[in-house]
Image 1 (cartoon, rainbow, N blue to C red):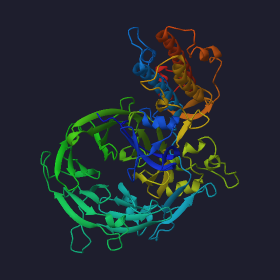
Image 2 (cartoon, rainbow, N blue to C red):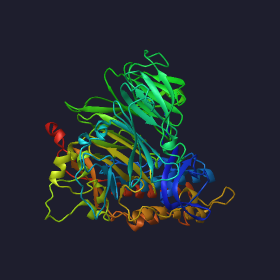
Image 3 (cartoon, rainbow, N blue to C red):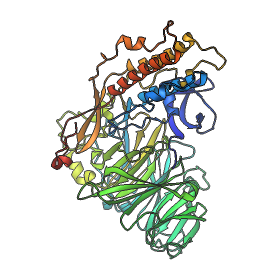
Image 4 (spheres, helix red, strand yellow):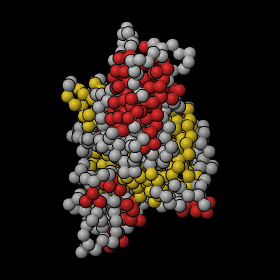
Length: 637
């Protein structure tokens, strides 16, 4: 299986690495324990901080509110000497590194990703003001303008009514300008191309034919769309073909090629599941820079091609007689193919359970199957997409909800948000606008995704709160943000998801200087004596105390409609357990001679303190009977 901790990509605010002596701000990638700048592949120098050590480790901030039981990764036996161990430089360093790994783990458990997501400081949306509008009106919401304007549903538009029928889209970032993008969407009969930025969304093309010439054939029935930086691919379900178009003119700012789709190739015709180049009602697509996956829905098989449309492989290992195909996507960081399906709920009498299949290895021959913990209700899966600025996140959307997931723990719930949480209703004009914007600078209350307040008439007039999510995708944005594009029947939203900062923490700060594994200063030729051993132990103890002295509370979790949500934190911590004798016993005294036994005592004391800190950061769970379990009499404490 793919090791999803072997490679990391994330945004740094300058406190983790340096480049030519100055703080490095930007997207960094870590491979084989070496850090690189993503764009230039230059090696960058790491700083001695807890957050830097965490970035290199396998404990990369992947804790959720559901992780109620926490065990140190290394046991006391891992950290102490056995009776037949010979004390020397290598084994001393090995045992000390095990203790330092525990310190790093404790630091990582002091963060939990908020599951009231996404976190956003502003919103832009495109909508129609009048039924005769040929262009979108762009609205920006912020703390100073927290109210939606009335919008005309796309279905009522005389010129853009096709937008009400969009069921899938794909986006690409402009190659030269990080605030610009191209957005491509489909209805059953129309291919739509748009260009956008923070302040605009322009419709460039609405085409219902294979090419733009008058004598070209119309689309039969479009079934799916996917893109990479060069091409966009479409499926024509009725005609059983795959279409490939060059779209570089939409993102490379070349005036001679600008805003044109160029037909490149067609593949297909009617065929069975084992036919390499033919299909029976192809629908969903997934695309990477190198590969294209096609869901041959009539044959219930996924066929894999390279982007030149050369056949590579097929996937027929999913029982699509029992499960329904939802969506698929290529992981841009690990080159895995994600396929989501859904079947009858395994925990309730109605609704669906989602299943994730991850394929990797040669021709995607290795399969991993995961049962996701989210209950989908009666919502159908719409899209899969991946973070552009962090290698640890992926998302999937249904018609009513967006789910944020870890790659390292795909079954766990990190965060969800509903389409109805795009606003809160029933606010009278005389009421003080006490909305979520007022809490932007407070501790993570901005993560509730209740962006603003709207009035009841607006909600009724345009169906905002009951409209489905038609399409959801994202691409890398500025300063560590993922730029999200969400389409409904009356508005197209653009907003930022800050994966770099969307954490609740129980520390005073999110980073501290520490000695870490790189702080080991002994060398193999040095004579090991009490003072040199104490010097290394002092560093470890100092790192422990740095964490302990900066813990300000405990995480709080509350059950909301049967879903455990991360709250703020409380101050239910007791430091009386940390008595001075514990710290004194961590060091070796000059009159002690049995070196292995004495080091074991020291390391055991350190381990006990680490365990006490772990117990401090366990979440306090709100005591409440969950409604789904009332009949069983189970109380979650």
